Structures are given as structure tokens and as C-alpha cells.
Length: 427
Ligand code: ADP
Image 1 (cartoon, rainbow, N blue to C red):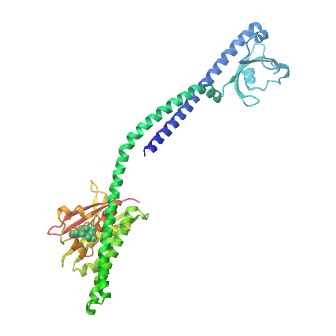
Image 2 (cartoon, rainbow, N blue to C red):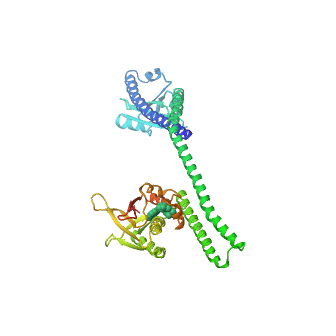
């Protein structure tokens, strides 16, 4: 973490430095080019003024190191050139700056030298006798300029980078310190939870396996009377069923934990799904002599929600199953779906799925804890009804993925009401 923050600060500083140097050079170079052109124009005017009085001899007397002077006759013939032999030079009538000067009195142009290694800037002035005086200077390339400034630039880069290294070191430690500490704590917590979960799973699996093994051993050793064998078979079957449920719940939870399967989001009608789940739970409800009913409170509208259907199904199934399991003989379970409107009561933002039972109820102090893994209010009762202690953890996890909220309340006259507030969601 510290290294990553440190590296990022250094990269950002280096990139910013490089960019600002590039912009600075661009600006300086363009200002420098403008200044050169302005000076060249003044120089051309001055030389033209001098020639008025002294003629060509004035040109010959001028210093020639940096500036090249050329005199061109009205027909384009080069009469004088400070750097090359005039007689060997070709006709200059077609040179851009000369053409401009012939036409307008003054002309300017820039071009690369014949070898394309240097750039020249030219200024030409028509004289009174129709000939043209041309003055040219070599223009620095941007590379030239950088090479000239390389020493101060390197010094500046070194100072800035050293400063950045120092500040990045301090800053990354300051920022990363508390984050790393929190990550460490979270990792320790996650590790502790993982260990607890593994211990619980082992314990929960060992118990039914030991029972199965014990019953099977009694049968194998011929200790069980033949008319008791069916009841022993039933116990083995029940324990095996408990193990299957437990393993199914563990698989569901680990899928939710690891997000192993990228689950598909779809638009579904919550009423249709609730009705379907109830249909599937009719038999266990009848077995427990509990009546199961659905109340559609959406009017003519459908309860469309954009969700992961398999998770919403798990939510409804687990809550309704509990309402049946923790009910009493002759009890009832009422499932309803109704819209929840926004502040102004116009737009439906959520749907409320409520499952009300008149069963044994949940004491207030347990209402929060029942969502913990393997937590049961009454362990023996949960086992007796085939509970695994994982159903509501799956519900909590699945609700979290949908940003849904769960409320647990006492039902009037006894029992429990669980309400899940599911956002309508968006495709
Ligand atoms: P289990 O598999 O034991 O039912 P759950 O995670 O589904 O595990 O529920 C945790 C505990 O919450 C249950 O053991 C039970 O004690 C309590 N519980 C859940 N739903 C109800 C309910 N409708 N009425 C009474 N108790 C409930």
C-alpha cells in the first residue's frame, strides 16, 4: 500500500514536471521566434537606410558572422552575398520573400536550409533603384534551445524530484499507515470469522453423522429388533436430510460470500414469485397444520422489481419456511406484497414483502442476533424442525446485495412479522 501510494506520487510529479517543461519550452520558443523576426525587420530597415547613403560598400563593411546579407538585382540576379560567391548563385526572383518585396516593398519568410538541418528566417526590402536587400539569420531549433538550457534544467529536475521523493515518502506513510492498520484489523476479523464458521460447520456436520453412524452400527450388530428397524431407518433418513440441508445452505452462503457465480439480474413480478414459493410450501405447511395465504395489495398493478431472481426466491422461501417451522398447531402464515411510495406519494420506489405468523415469536433481544450464522434462539427446537441456523444469514446477505432492508417485529396477538423492503431497481 505504502509503495503504491509512493509510486503514484512520484509518477504524477514526474509527469507534471515533464508537461510543464514542455509547455514552458513551447511558450519561450514562440516568444523567442517572434522577437527574432521583429529584430530582423529592424535590422533590414537599418541596413537599407545605410545603403541609401553608401551603396554596396556599406554591405561589405558590416560584420557577417551571424547575419547573412544578400543584394538582388531587379531581374533576380544575385549581385552580392556575404556568405557565398554571388556569381555561382541561381536567380532569386522566385524566392518568396523576394517576390513579396518586389510587389509590396517588404517581404518575410522562413524555411529549412537545403540540408534540412537548420531553419532560416528571411526579411527582404525593396530599395529605391528596384533591387532587393535581403537579410537572414539562423533560427534556433527547439532542440538547440533545450541543449543550451540543459544544465539549469537538469538541476531543476533533480531538485524537484528529490523534493518529491522526500514528500512522497512522508505522505505515503502518513496516508497508508491508518489504512493498513484498518485492513489488518479487518483481515484479522475475517480470519476469526472464517475459523469460527469452519469450527461450526464441522460441529454441525459431525453431530448428524455420529447419529447416522450410531444407528447404522446398532442395526449392523443385530441389536435392533426387526420391528424397530423402520423407525431407525427413519431417524437415519432424517439426519441425512439435515445434513443435505446444511450442505445446501453452506454452498449458498459461500456463493454469496465469494460472489462465485456472476448472478443474472432480471425484472420479475414479486407477487408472482411469492405466490409460486407459497405453492411449493403448501405441503410442509399442511403437514404442520399451518394455513398459508397470500394477499396481493398492489391492486391491478404488477410488483415489478429488477433483482437476482434466485436470491429473492431464497429470501422468500427462508422467511416463509421459518414462519411455518416456528408456528403452532393450527397457526397461520400471511404473506403480502404492497408498494411503497416516495415522499410525495407518487412514485413507487420499493415493494414491501411481509410474512406474518402467529407462532412462537422472537424475544426482542434476539431479533438482531437471529441473522448471525448458526445462531438459533432455541437450538433444540431448531434441530427438531430441521433448521440449520443458516437460513437468515443467507436472507441477510441476499438482501444486502439488493440494498433491501429487513425489519423484524412482533405480530399483534403473538408471533412475528418479517418485512423486506426491496428497491424497485433499474435495468
Ligand atoms: P434455522 O435454520 O434454525 O431456522 P435461521 O437462520 O433461519 O435458522 O433462523 C435463526 C433462528 O431465528 C431460528 O433458529 C429461530 O430460533 C429464529 N426464528 C426465525 N424465524 C422465526 C419465526 N418466524 N418465529 C420464531 N423464531 C424464528
